[in-house]
Image 1 (cartoon, each protein chain N blue to C red):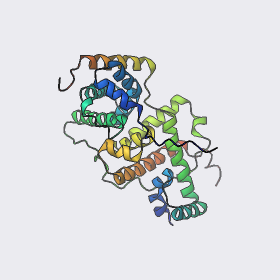
Image 2: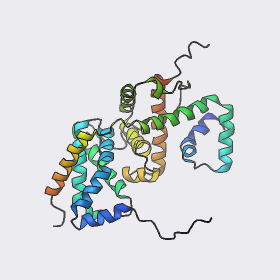
Image 3: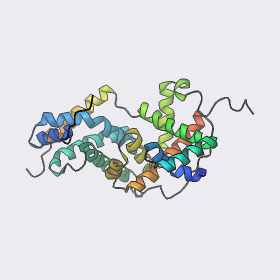
Image 4: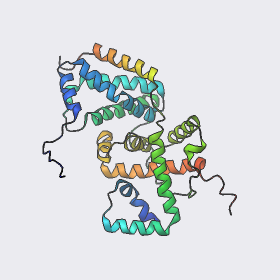
Length: 207
Length: 82
């Protein structure tokens, strides 16, 4: 049976919520907060690597968004707009923490290192079968902490938060090719580092 | 296709954005290069393991506290232009 055509363009449900919130409907704004508070917290913690900072940033992001709802144009998704505020607030927090050092999306990415795979061992058995959830969490946290901030942020938005390459570029103020290049290096560096933990345990036994 | 050329296509390959003719070259390369095959498999696993094990997930009690703090802050905050 043929599918029924629906020519009308789909409008994201957030648009109506933002519209209501703009008119002073705090329940609509609260629903937006509920939908995105976890995401903003995760992004902030991935960038700052500090829980207290991430909590403060999450509060500041929603306060800023609330105060600037009129500036949301609707050209991008509301969530992308929020993430962009979150990234900026997080980078500002890092700048304040390291007063003498510039912090931006360009930090630590000058080197070409990390784009060449060196470890070719298979990950067997499946890491999720050999480590407990807390051990695995610790390994994943330690590994991503070691990634340069500029790579970590791209990986967080694109792969952990599942944003598209275009949305990631928009949220970070980067070009699409820059996002792709950083994403490749972030993924390969993480893979290389995780391989130290996950490489096939018994490979030394077999010459 | 050599390994360097393959790696430069990895992101598009994961996204399914590789033109058909190039995809055939990639598949040929993967059939003949075990190292690149491992890189593909373990990079996929890297992505999925981070996605499936959110390392910075808010615990419910912290989430409620944070939510209340956000709403308190926003209800007190003046709207711009008013």
